[in-house]
Image 1: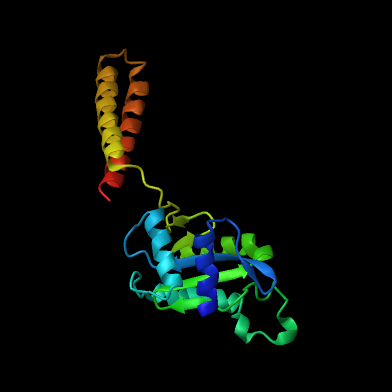
Image 2: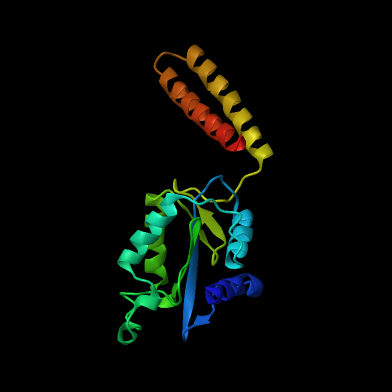
Amino acid sequence: MAYIRAVSMFHFLAATQLSVWTRGTMSFDLGVWYPQKRIGNKEASELYVRLCDGDTSGVTAHPAIDAFYAELTARHPEIDTIPEERIDDHDNCPWSCELDHSPGHVIMSCVWSKATYVHRLVQNLASKHGLAIYDPQSDVVTYPDGSTGARASRLGLWILSSFGLLFTAIFAYSGQIAPSGNSVVFYVFAGLCALMAVACFRQARR
């Protein structure tokens, strides 16, 4: 368990997109946790570092974590359960070391040759179980709905929302005074602007 923490910490200290050498093969790491609240990429990075250091105070225990872990290891068992003669069968076990698992999180480290496959698998399972997935290689947290931790400024969102409402009113008024054959186009644009305003408003309030 301490080994995966050392491996994961190296990503941040070296500030590189490549993983470290583990068992003679480069590794690719991912972390998942239950998103009790939405956090940005920077906060997710800090949380991941704390998890790698053994501090689980920032995550919340949730049954979805155990369900995720059970389904993941049913497909690809933990490396310490693999017979020595199958240790290099990465189709069966892509892990480069033991998974770091608590009731609130799972951190996985796989061999680099399986990075694309494992990333896709973990994304699908995390989405299925309603978990956030953090990729330290790209420094991005992704939520079950597909959104990420990249945050637009709240001021910018409020401004966009205001302009959306303004143009909604302009297009709606234009539709009222336009010839009957052209009014539909203005109403369509008014509806699109209203949807944009609502979306920006909801995001700004998070």
